[in-house]
Length: 182
Image 1: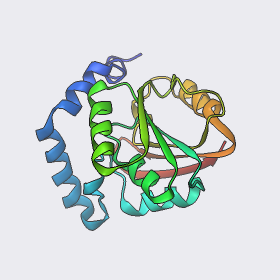
Image 2: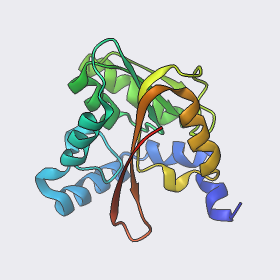
Image 3: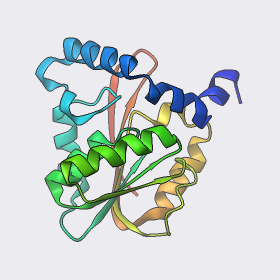
């Protein structure tokens, strides 16, 4: 593991990131300037996801009331909460940052979104096998040290026929939107 990926895989590194309100505000302003109205600033996202991409994910996930989705690497929770609100699906957010999880819980309570949040990682979610009807991950995969283990874990938690939607940014910040049925 490189020094950079070791740093990125430590919860305390992300706790420090999420605890910095001025960093979040700077990123929000930067993304608003870059994406304009397409940036979902009200969704408490720390990623580069756009409103159009969120709507595409909703269409691809094919989930609704009585179903459950997992947001892997949920951070502050905004995009997963938005998708849960639009679809009516229950949401479980997974992240290893205690600070991010508390912020996600507080936001969900404020907005009245049916959700739960638990500590875990992309490759060790703590969820039961075949327990979710869909999963999403917004701009997280780049920081996962063992991507193969992460995708295996994702496949394990998905019910048969369920979909995993993710957004990935390359090193030069070009958007690649991938869709797959696992």
